[in-house]
Amino acid sequence: MGKKQEDVQNNVFIYCRVSTKKQKQSGNLERQKQRLLNYCSENQYTVVDVFDEVASGLNDKRRELTMILRRLNEVNCIIVEYPDRLARFGYNYLKEFAKSLEVDIKAVEHNKELELNEEMVSDLVSVVTYFSAR
Image (cartoon, rainbow, N blue to C red; front, side, top):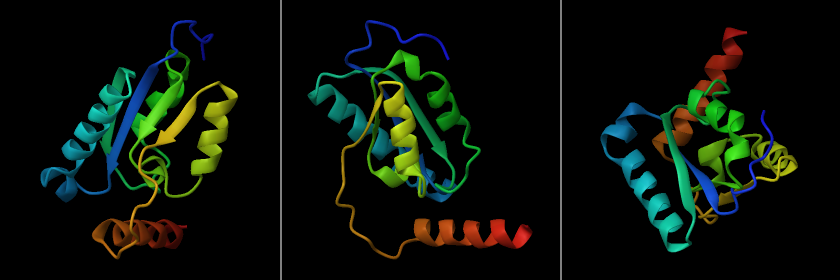
């Protein structure tokens, strides 16, 4: 990873994720992206890049998230809608890693109502499938 650029004070990456293609097709990914772009505009952040993907929050081989981690020297913050958009488990590890490189991770919504939905079920199935394959 390169040296941190000096002029990144308000530079941010946006990261959006949905778990299924069905969620993307119904517009959930695009709405999430638009909400975060609006948030950044209202708070005078400079959006360097927007990363979005369709993948389980448990998947540890997400291409877009990997690209963000490789380019952290370009920004001082990663903007996500909810912590679980970045990772279902290990969010605090990612936050600490980014912090060690002087990058914040900001979840703009914290009080997501817990409800049984297809995304949580999908992630549960992913966990069961992953461990049963071992």
